[in-house]
Image (cartoon, rainbow, N blue to C red; front, side, top):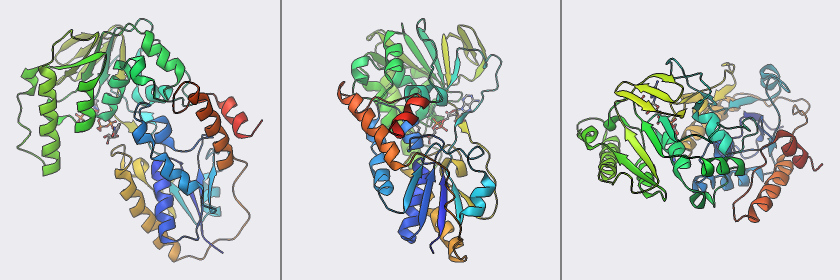
Length: 394
Ligand code: NAP
């Protein structure tokens, strides 16, 4: 008998947990359970579709799926097809890797207006997540306010700012790509509630904003007259100092030199949102669309013996995909220590009918084939019915 572990959530942290578990105990049986019929979570639905290099991490995860004792179980929803109690009874340990998939609220008047979108919903639409088939109406959007000073805000601003030629090798869903290409965009404002020295952008992602084809990045030099050298541990100081250097480069750019402008604005906490306008601590700004990029919440799960959370579900929505690897490996060591004190449970296979790895590979093959006709890595199927039919070979 071998121990059986359920990992709920087949995203990066879930795969890294599987990897960590198998490194310590190669004879484990692992079920990677996901609500979607497709694996890879954030790597498929959250990473920006033009960042194919980041998405390439899924090749490592495919190698895990190829292992005989690792099963993918897609289209299995905990609460609908299996309860948390059943999971805990049937498996020797349960790893929760469900990430964080609910946009945080700003808490200002007007944020429920239809032109206000959370970044999770917006990026999931661009990425063909089947729960988010429809995006905002961009047909009359000229000015966009992107709230937040993290890498998600940069993703959102960049994806709106890039022209169709710059997105040609991405896996953005065609309807979203067309909507952005046709939108009469002129200005994208990336808005930080605090000063420029507090922005959490990473250097490479910020520098990328200075290399856009149809958009010029702009900043106000008066807002950059700050000193990032005084505080924080060294890597943080270096990151902030480099960010300021990049932003100073943006301040030297010529306004109007490209059809679109991306403005970096600081000390501009949102106060209220109204149709066509956002009020900030520093004044009002025209905004036909507002996208909040201010972090996420997770969904509840039982916190009890034998249940171990990893990744964003454990520590909140911070860290890149590679930085979550070490976290998942550390939790995997705790899981193995727990298993080491227990005999494996016996009982019938607890998995309900699901989409297995072969089903996912049918989807993958069809998407890649659809993409190759257009020189794209893939064209995603974003429809639940189509995904399930392809996966089942109907
Ligand atoms: P983040 O880096 O924590 O940024 C969140 C931003 O939202 C901060 O600027 C924060 O400002 C702001 N914010 C929070 N509440 C607000 C409010 N009520 N009003 C106005 N602003 C508010 O998180 P993220 O951008 O969501 O990214 C999540 C993680 O994924 C990060 O670790 C990020 O690096 C990573 N990521 C990486 C990449 C990449 O590597 N290419 C791409 C995307 C995401 P304060 O600082 O003032 O709180």
